[in-house]
Image (cartoon, rainbow, N blue to C red; front, side, top):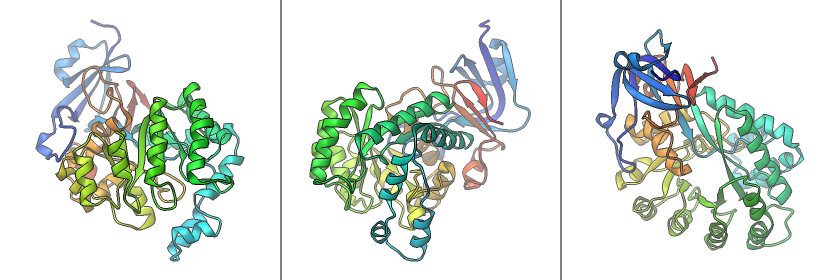
Length: 411
């Protein structure tokens, strides 16, 4: 008997999310459900998943679950902006009164207001803010979270934000995956064109990010008021030459982002609220993950991304929270996914896969998102006996217990 083997269970049901296709529609009968299940843990990885009774003889220790619970892999939130300072509550109040995004920016709000405050905030405070938000996500069942920079928009400030994300990752139980979003918008204090700002970023910032190992991912916002498709093509090609994985904020208000994401082989195209049938077909025929962000739609009061049509066309779909200070301040991935599922008529299998196993591809991770031997022992348990209760409660039922790398965390 291996002295390090620990058995956790029994769980009324284990939803493994194993053996699912990576793209296209899913039906609930494709889910692998193990009744009266146990998870055998060896250090920080899963040794076996199966009948609790059968696994018991293999374990050195047993962590007994004394009430009916359903277990599934930890959630993976692949698009957040949780490293920022300040608040945009005044922006939200103006939006409720009918002010447009452009009008709010003209009054001194919007992304630029967050940039100003974040630039003034020290790295220790930014680290603590990011850590606090990551811990909140962890208690909601998110065991891996992507975190973007993008509220610095100059070399020193962007490096500070990425260092704060790294510091938070070192202190957090949750895994934080950093992404450089210096190409968020052109800052007002840069006295040049958007292309010149991108050239400056390629020349002065990205080599520092690379040499400091602060991020392996580069993102750009392609839209009206941000960067053009041509500028994005230049920037992403240069980032690719430096060895970065590519990500695109695509088709939030106007099209073109999906096209460039597919053309350059990005890991994901995120937002997609404005995507056309042509865009849907393009992304479905590619390996680019379609990341939809219901939190932004809820925060802005606009239509959801066409998740149903993306799946039916054969795309790989992930759902992320987009937690940010402006358009998506909620930051509750499970609640948002449940609401999107109702409006877009997603099966429970499609929704659960989109916040776990299918989301991992957007981050280039192949060691989590499934309850399977050899995968990280990241899993969460809900206080119910039937997995369908999770989404039926539409965010009203949150995980009661969370395990990260085999260790129970929180309450």
